[in-house]
Amino acid sequence: MIDLRLLRDELDAVRDAYQRRGGVADLERVVDLDMKHRELLRRVEDLRAEQNRASKAIGAAPASERSLAIARAKELADELKDLEPVLEQLSGELDDSAVRLPNLPHGSVPRGSTEEENVVEREEGARPSFDFEPREHVELGEALGIFDSERGAKTSGSRFVYVTGQGVLLELALVRFAIDHLLKTGFTPVVTPVLVRERAMFGTGFLPADEQEFYRVERDDLYLAGTSEVALASMHSDEILDQDALPRRYAGFSSCFRREAGSYGKDTKGLIRVHQFDKVEQFSFAHPDASWEEYDVIRSNQEQILQALEIPYRVLVMCGGDLGSSAAKKVDHEAWLPGAQRYLEVTSATNATDYQARRLQVRFKGAGKGLVHTLNGTACAVGRTIVALVENHQQPDGSVRIPEALRPYTGFGAITAP
Picture 1: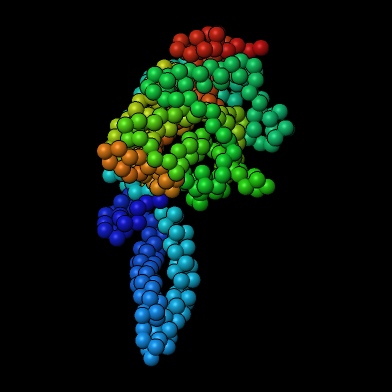
Picture 2: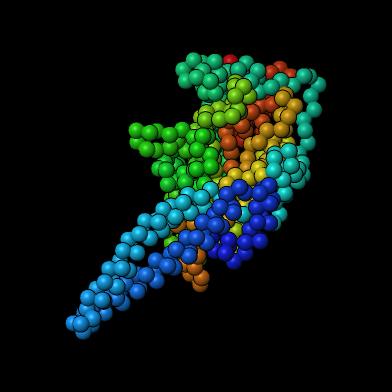
């Protein structure tokens, strides 16, 4: 959540920032509730102080005036009894509305309301040329026996898939390749829990904004996380980190679970819009003064991995209206798919500034003190990376070439039909 002091001290700047998101409906309600809450809180605090003075005055009052002192103390107590429930209700309304306010977009975020207004920053890598008609990943992958959508659907329903044969070896190779790359830049590998408490989902901003996207285990009051970002951000909740130890960098690996709400009829086969997938995620706790430098580190890692895998891609800067609730800025990297003749998001990078840290109470101290900034970025969304690899490195005989950088991890140079 944002710092409500900004609404009191810099309201015009907040309004202008939210215009980058196309406006925020709840803003004026929060401003109104915050003003009413502060006014009532001052009244209640003044009454409490006055009641304390009145209570002390009873003992010091002459006998002839004691009944008046008692009556005054009771009058104040009755007024407090009436106002305190109102304050509690108003506080709850303010909290409920304030947590729905998204993060303030960074000044470099393009203005806009829809994904059509996202900005292509640049394109990297040469698109492959073929002397044959390139095929899409579903046709290629099933012919090569690296995944099986039909049996996945038979077992678990649509958007589940078995990864099989050389596909498994490719998946494990990609995970280790990505983690080894992150180790070079100071990331500590972590295998995270996939079941998390509501506070972890709330703390990262996925609740209440995106609740429809996630699976909930109601019996145990737990959620299946859609990204290891949730567990990584919560690792240091309610902790004070040493300023000199920042940034703290983690490479989280986990299975991820998403409902894919609203994507009915899209990519029902293959590895793109599945309900369960594996991912290596970068996550950093950074000092506010070094936040954007850390963002550059995360983005650089993403591009180096895509370049090493010889995947052509474009860099897409999200406009304000296409930002998630916690993001101050978000940049996607979209791989070119020659078979499908379209781009596919394969990584994204987000600077959440102090939005998540305020919810999770992650602070730092040293020469200064305050809330840390949190940042995250995909290192390798395995299924989607396999899609990009298969389509870009397909060969005329139906096999798929493995990029040189990945061969030490796979142990083979090509995926061939069984």
